[in-house]
Length: 179
Image (cartoon, rainbow, N blue to C red):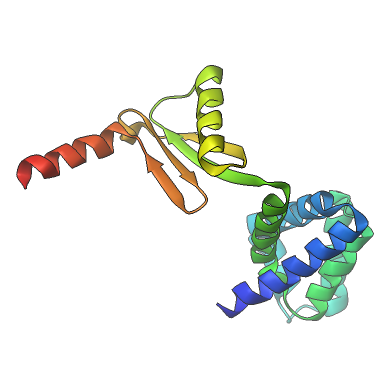
């Protein structure tokens, strides 16, 4: 879990700088965009983290990616620091930690919702309101369709799972009848 504590320290430092400058949301977005690019391209991840490539070449690649993403000077400096310390591979973890810290500061929580069928706008709104009441925070939902649920929804809010799926209800009935 060493990389987790390293990621938290970097994320905390970034958040503090962003709060001082009043742009922590932007920093979070830029770091998230870069982390997605690195995570989404094995070639880019290797080019940035493999010490077999000259540091100057890795820095050129990083600079080009950051320029394409329109990154601020703060994020450019931060990623150069990661490159200098051979910690670019930790970037996705830093991004995840930073997102969680930004959400906590802004009073937001992410919810991952799976439903058996696509939800209409009214259902999404009612579900959002219910989850906001449960959490006491603004909920940002990501909804996926999962026909294996048979009916209902499963919502993961932070570390808590609310399972209202027909599949789970049927499994509970089966266990009750068998036991």
